[in-house]
Every structure is written in structure tokens, then in C-alpha cells.
Length: 268
Image 1 (cartoon, rainbow, N blue to C red):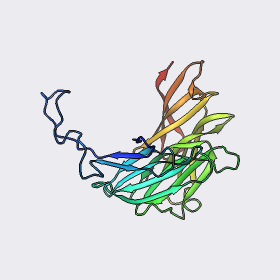
Image 2: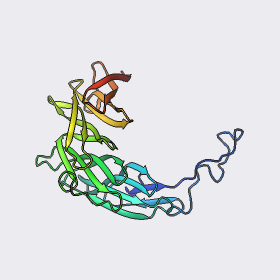
Image 3: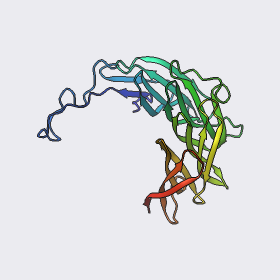
């Protein structure tokens, strides 16, 4: 959540328990029904205001050792960077923090994934010289959020035009999805990268329409990769042609061939 001053707001809530089947939606909550936990931050709330202007959380992961929070840190009206925090699960206390601001424009993190030792954050930056956006992938140590030097260039991979929007990781690789400039407009881009080096091992590109098509999220199981996104938006809005569609792409992890393309829902 974002507080009134434009910083990060993190709530610790007690869940479970409840008043039983007869309590009904209007019954007052018990001590374990969504009440703020007093020992977490101040009265169950942790706030963080890392930038001088409006900051925003974009992703949160809960692990055995800590909470990991990713968001934007805005230092000027038109200049935002990446912000990552590691906090104690019980108290909300700050354990580690990291920031990066590769350009003087708006650099945007969008998603995060974790494995046993590392944090992977994906998004976009405008460190391109011409103000356009490109993919940015950071690999950081879970222990102190420091960049892992042998991944990409000093812990950072930058490539393609556009922006990365989703990420998942397993022992076989790092799966990153987003959009790139494809035949003059935004198309889907899906990559599998090496978790140690960040080198792209295989990739898929799709361009369903002449408008804005973007892959937004990715999930994996032991065999398949599932990607969801949208196609057919012009200027961020559905165009006046066949409408805007949401797609699900099911692709084999072992190859770069899409096995099945399913139109999940359609908005007209």
C-alpha cells in the first residue's frame, strides 16, 4: 500500500480463527481475524519513505528468513529508481536495503522472484541515451541485497527495447516476460536466462496485433511455463477493432516452442 505521503506502507495482520459459521459478515472480528499485530512495526504498520516524492510498492515476497519488498523510489517528479527492502517477518524491522537509479528519467521495477540464495528483480530503465526504455534484470544476494557481480555486468542485465513485467525462477533457469518493440509496435517477449550469468539461453517473440501487446506475468511447474498478458490495446486502451484480448501462453520449458496458445478471456 502507499501512504498519504507517498511512501511504502506494510501491514501485519493476524489471520485464521474466526467466529465460526454463524458469525456472519457483520460480526466483529476476533483477535485472529485480520487485526493488526501490535508487535509488527508500530501497531502492526511499517512505513518507509525512501524518496522525496511519490514512492510505490510493486511486489512483496514472504520467505522463512524475511519479507522482501520491491518498489519505486522517486527523487524528482520525472525521476524514479528501484528500491528493495528486506524486513524481519516478526517485527518489520529493516534488515537490508538497496537502491538503483540508472537514469535521470523513470526507471521502473515490476516483479521479483527468489531462489535459495538470490533475489531477482525485473523491470525497465531508460539508461539508453535516447530516453527509451529497455529491459533491466538485477540479481542480488538475499543476505544483504548486494548485487551479484558475475551475473550480467556487475549484477545487472540490460537488453532489448521495452520493459520486463514478470519473472519466475527454478534450477533450470530464470524466466522473464515482458514487451519489446516488434515490427514498429509492442510485442510479447519471453526469455529463459541462465541463473548464474543472465545470458539468454532461448527466447520467444510474438506480435498478435498492430497495437500494444504485452506479456505481464509468468508461472512455472516442473514441465511447463505459463504466460499471461494482453494484446490489442492502443495508447493503453482497447482499440476499436476486434477488441482487447487476454491470452495465456503455455510453452515447454525444455524448448522454445509454444505448445499451446489459449485465449483465456476477451473484452469487447
